[in-house]
Length: 351
Image 1 (cartoon, helix red, strand yellow):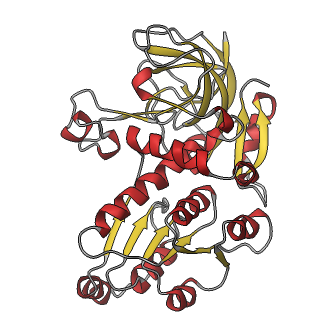
Image 2 (cartoon, rainbow, N blue to C red; image 1 turned 90 degrees about the vertical axis):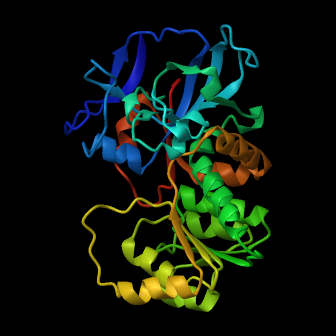
Image 3 (cartoon, rainbow, N blue to C red; image 1 turned 90 degrees about the horizontal axis):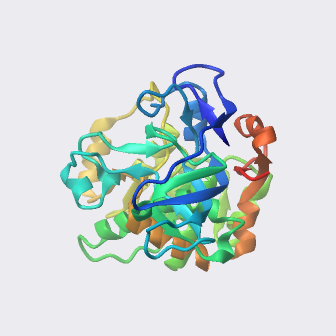
């Protein structure tokens, strides 16, 4: 038997560590020792019965989409060996498949029939052992053993930057300043990747204490906790990555992006968020200024591989500082009780 962190989707107070049957490897699958999972807002929503879909004919869903594991048995999978440090892709192509899935881009699935580990119709990685198709596993440098669980959130911003660069190539493109709104894990990792591009990086967040200001400044970036509109008017950003999910912050970005600028939305905004907007002026200004506004969710294999390279280049101590709490199965419920100063909370799966 194995231990796993599970929920009954759409049932309040169902979060529980339970014993489950040992996973059985099929063809082209790896047997993996679970090392750690990260907990994010998606997991909080799943535990809060906001959404979630279990494996067919099963009541409980194993959580965990921010994974880190070590190969126990590579089976018949070429290119992998026992002891390899790996991360599993979250999203799997739909079985039909749609054209995007057929081209290796399930993150852009066009019919919604994709499945996702720990979220939708597939068990996640918050288990002491799990299996994964070899084609959905990405090897990490052994140097990332203590921080490799950060790979999945890094894939989101790797995709964001990939698409920002693609949009930029629509015309002459020489951005100088980027604003990242939100200094949570995704925002910090977006800022990290911005520094690789030699940009002047500004990060906006509400807090004045804790690790966020220090982590931003250690990147050589500027930390702001003032009014979003005033800050953006003074910075005049060419690129904005919006990672708060706050509608008023997203609107401030739309209204204050530079001419020819690009705004990428990566934060999840809660439903039923109403604010007064002069939509006519906003649309007209976006047209006149050739602005591009788009959203990003999930990532494909290429983004995972790029993100693995990005993490391997980062200062390990800086990455380690992002992980502010390490728990185990014994106190896993604490991961779902946010405390002031928490940044990235992880659950180590081998006690």
